[in-house]
Length: 369
Ligand code: NAD
Image (cartoon, rainbow, N blue to C red):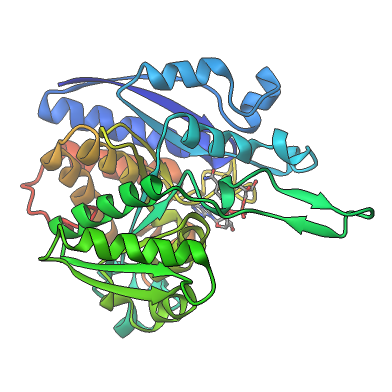
């Protein structure tokens, strides 16, 4: 198979970890006989410096002409003082909207070998395997432009706006994912307060008739926030609005012990996707060879699975990651009593080596579905 991938390293640690995803893809290509070509473009602060905009037209054009997009992270103190419409993070919101990436998938796994790194008790974090499906191009982050009103601007308005079609397509995606996982769907809303949540609930109930094998449960977002850290194993697929999903997925990320372990996929209905780690540009450790590259590497595995339907190849990456962790290697964000501390580059090398060695794939994780 030949595929062209747009790589947008972005800022801070984004540049260090993007290297890792590329090295891993090259190793997978060599082992399984595929050709992954990569082309680079700027986004975020780097794009502001070079082109005075966080999302240049050339970057969008490259993404549109590629088979998938890999993104590092954006942002940093250098650009913090810019007005909000010019900030690096605007580039992220804009690329998702421009490419129509409405479904954000964030798998959360309680890795056995990392249980010690989780702030949760091991008996709570172990065997967690859930997927948060966050609506990404609507809701509170994309309502009518926010505004301040009144003579002294003492009133402020943000709008949570959804069309029925926008809710239907994300809910359908979540049901499809539940069907290939454990067939349990939790829809998270605030239907006791918000009209948009009441419509969300109606649509979930309607869609459920098409997926009778899936067990459906509705949960208020405040209860979900509590249950995610008290009974995380009870969840399989969680589907929710943009803002709720943003908050809940960061909360759930702590189950794994580090933001540096969490990959994500943002998808369109036709399988095109943008893949990025959940974490930001980590300016406090940027340029120090300290960043954990595994979230980025696992995002590349998700790309193989969701955009290219290369499941065995994706599992070879997941397995390599699992083996490196089982062997005790840790970046500094994952300190455990007995780990061997390695830097970003060495962690990348270790995963690449495991892929090249090519042990039989036993789908230990099978989890980043
Ligand atoms: P962050 O995710 O960058 O960092 C939070 C903490 O986690 C830091 O202590 C950092 O060192 C650590 N961390 C993050 N990724 C890590 C990794 N791979 N390995 C080891 N440790 C890691 O969040 P922040 O500090 O709130 O934000 C920093 C910048 O990133 C801001 O400009 C913010 O707007 C931006 N941001 C971007 C994205 C994105 O690009 N998707 C997401 C969140 C934040």
